[in-house]
Length: 152
Image 1 (cartoon, rainbow, N blue to C red):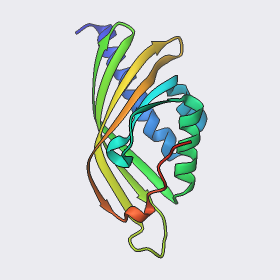
Image 2 (cartoon, rainbow, N blue to C red):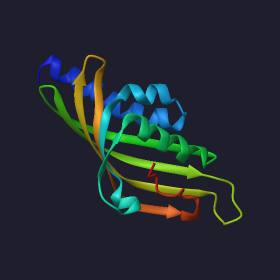
Image 3 (cartoon, rainbow, N blue to C red):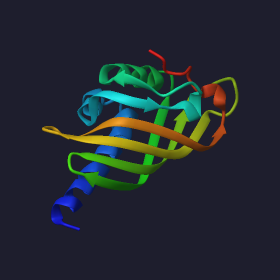
């Protein structure tokens, strides 16, 4: 492996980790920096439905509404494996997302765990995510905390 390949893999790992970090902190400007102008989005394993395309602004709007409906959210993105082919890359990572909201409906926690698969493109501003697929492996806790599927 060359030094360039090592650097690319580190930058990709930082890019996908930044996505979760920015969502957890409602840092929408930072999130925008790691998202491509258009993203192929697949959350069908969590919400059903079909994969679809969204703009960066649409996805940030969805994430904003999602996090505002909760008291806290924390994404743990671990074990990032990346493969680079020129200015395109793919990455996979384990993810555990903990959602918290005080509620009269029981347990204040809802945890979702699975994998993220990413597509990335190299831009003048660095690597950006242009494909995102969540595959849920398990979930536990109070699903009443789950906000409505993010559609707009």
